Amino acid sequence: MQTLFSRFATFPTILAALTTGTFAQRPVDLKNQNERVVMVVPLTGVGTYSDPKRPLLAPTSAKALQSAGILSYQWHPSDDGKYAIVEYAARTRGPLVAMLRDTRLIVAFEKGTREEIRPGECDSQVQERLRD
Amino acid sequence: MKPRLAVLTAVVAGCVFGQLPAYRTQVFPGPDPGEFSVNGGSFPTGSVLTNAGNVSLISNVMSVTTSEYEVRTTYQIQASGGSFVTYLRANPTAQLGGSGTFYAMELSNIAVASGSCTASVTLWRVENGVHQQAASVAIGCRDGMWAPGDLVWAR
Image (cartoon, rainbow over all chains, first blue to last red):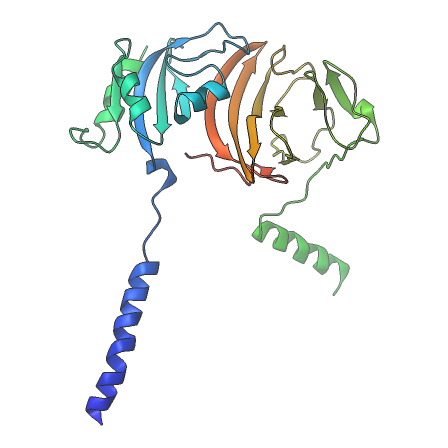
């Protein structure tokens, strides 16, 4: 009797354990999806609709953004308003590599890669350069 | 149920489910064009907002309960092209591509093809006509989508 019970109980137990494991997986945070770089760059643009104030390397229009293979970007100005800390996201690393090679960058970090940065290093280096 | 209790229940339920009532709902053509500052064109007379140019409608109706507010926009997207702009904290002369002081969320670069729809959302910060492009993101879209609810910002 005990053997019979064990035989019938084992399979559902294993199945339940696997099912729980599958559904317990947490989705990747949207902020960590795709390829991402954080940069400090000078601001550019004269402030019109067709040439707005924006970070260096940022496309001027939504159409140009997609053509460049960039999914999104967002930025904050430095205290003196001359620089921007900007995060670019792309589906693949290709479009970002060209940006990283630009000599006008002040500092750049690639999220989720090797020598990256000890915890807090990105913040401290960026803040150092954004100070007045 | 007593009326007071019913109202209280409705308010609590609304808060719990995040459905606070709108202080203003505008379906076009509006009942009173005077409630809007119109820049760059004329007040729409049809039920669908279409214009070949660049027209902005800035509501003059203020919330009586709070200075903070949220705007919910429902988009009718049936073909490629066009640009839809939602203005926030705008002065009466606000017009993207023109003058004024405001924040704006622009849905543009719309491409509809064989059941798929892609577009871009751009956040603008404009101060006395000086345009600053604060963020831009590529999105998927659909007819009847509404913002901000249907938009995934953190891409």
